[in-house]
Image (cartoon, rainbow, N blue to C red; front, side, top):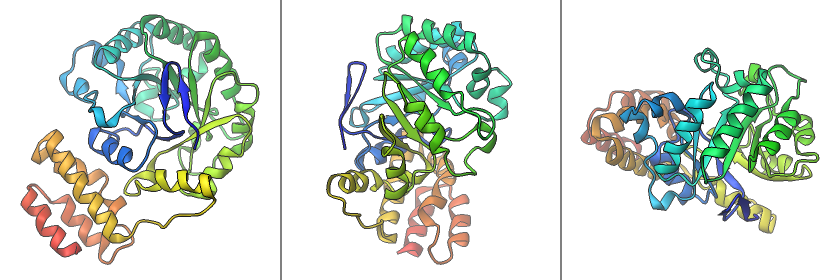
Length: 320
């Protein structure tokens, strides 16, 4: 896979881990990096919470050297809080700042943020110009193709972004109304890449070599971003790199490998958040590791009741 330059930041390969709310904290980012991801993202972070000095929000920006380069994604609906939060993100050490213009969640839309901003080109320009002016690190954006199927406002947003000094755009090739429930619209993505003067990254439904290749065959596509398809499947980054280099498909992870990743994830999570919270947060991701194995439903119930590392140790005895 090709190296990629985002502003002044060189990325070793163009296969990225997507930002995912409540999931892509430091522990999961470390695993993705070990699996070969070129760039990893924080989860979506509230600009206003950063400006108000919320300690829990700031902790989301704890970055280890082994994760770098790291892009921190923020959301908000006004230029002041976004530009002030951008400076905080920069001061806390993120390598790249990403602005969310694609989140379809209702509570985000209610504050005029995420995909809701796609309705207001003037406000988008104001926010992007303000953020770019206030920081020295590269600024990127992540967008959707529009609100409804067959709608494609991505080319227009990319044009605005270029004019505002944005260094890269990630296009989730689905409308907000469909979330993750349909196949990505590759025609809309192709139109998004056509004539773009900055790197365009493809995102949406990438889970294997076939789905990755569909994006990378699009002229001017600069790379791909993988979300849920990478959780509990971290070698997908390395497998894809090898596939595009040699044309040979790698082996999917075995149950033993997945359990090994689960164990490492628990270690990282409890180290970072503390034992109680670290185990509680594992409930959001455990099913990615244990699906398709015997008694998966029962095992998931055991995960949901874990409160100590001793409980987890007992669970590992069952999984072996």
